[in-house]
Image (cartoon, rainbow, N blue to C red; front, side, top):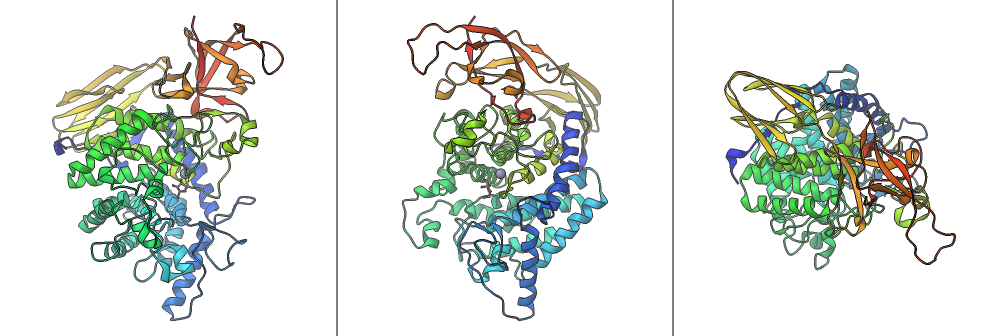
Length: 628
Ligand code: FUB
Ligand code: ZN
């Protein structure tokens, strides 16, 4: 690992996005998603499933007050993943074991918005929730409402299934975001107090455990970066070092002995340094790999970095959908085996693609290979954007590549694939994750080190750094790019050139770089190892994947074929291509084969992320190709 190549992202506060497409998306999140979620967290949306999130903090505050007053506090069972009025006491914790994380993600996104543009109302709303969170925190720093409300004696006794360390991770990320936005330390200090408790609980002398759902590794690194507190980095490394060691900690806490196979789900079957394949629950996986990359960079740990590189290759070469989606199965929301990428059974959780973006961003900080930000683009412009409706009012959790509404209704294997976006989810991990990612996009456009500024994403924007002021003007229809640079000292500007690399420009004064990167639609073939896609192609323009929707192309998308010579015609927001509809051969289910007949048609492709905005209908990304 060559630390001279290391780069770091440029703070959100120094970047201004001027691009209309992204400015609209960021404003949409601020206008629709953030206010909606603010109300959802407090169960103020009529007809919506209850979140219980803020209610839990209020219950935890009451418990905390009783403890401080020396009064007796009730106990309730901690034995489920989800609690509601039907299965638990009215005074007990309600919601998912990770319910607290929803408000933390909301505050993190609010922090990003406050950084971009100060908004008094949003600040007051965030302050209101921060006040409640801090009041719920126990004297010793502990902060997880499930255990505070239900049973203080059981904290950290089920690291495998429950989510105390996961919720801590989101708390820390919220604390950092809000501190960066406002300079106010209240939430950051609460996160540090919980982090201090975690550091003194998990170490060589005490508990040798690690989280069942990763994230706290990268969150501890964020806390370390902001506070300079070494023990946070050490504890993050400790979690990596302990994970997968024998005897398995998850065996010890459950008083059992296993061969570790079931811990594949948690990436805890072997030590992370020995892992070379992405396995298990996809979100957990990419959060772990992101933390591993963070730690390997800070500690210049070559062995850990090598594991990250191997896992990256496995994902990018064998386990990633063309849309940047990951997780091929609903069972365990998980990765499966190499080249298993079924279109109509895909899970592709929005959160998993967000985690893949985190992993890619961190790998790019270590070594600026163009493929990392190419994957960021792939995930961002397809699966992540598809996670939200065009009005910002409904969301996909699962992002399949082929959807047939009837199958979603009647086929048990496809029940997870919704043909229309949902208003909200009882397990609402994806919308707030999407909100925080889109809101913080500005901070990933540029990276820098002492001698260089990297342009990772061609998004019209301005940045001010110690080396230079840089402005990108990118017209996506013409492909024209102008980069204005005003150097304060000589440096090298590196501009990502698709997947191929970064082109260097030595700048020592004022300069304008003119480029044209006009992307043309292309037919993209998938490796023959992917059984699903033999004889099929997808349409892409740059990293944007296109799809066919019933609303434009009629019923029975499986009957359509695209010409191998499609003569693409580009319109503002769709692409026309020459294609065919296979005619019905004969009535009946089975009959002797004869060469099919085709009707010539024009196919109309729209960007994948736009599908599902016109009611319930069929959609497919891959289409059979007919040679001509
Ligand atoms: O367990 C917390 C979150 O809930 C996961 O990251 C998502 O996959 C969902 O299962
Ligand atoms: Zn999710």
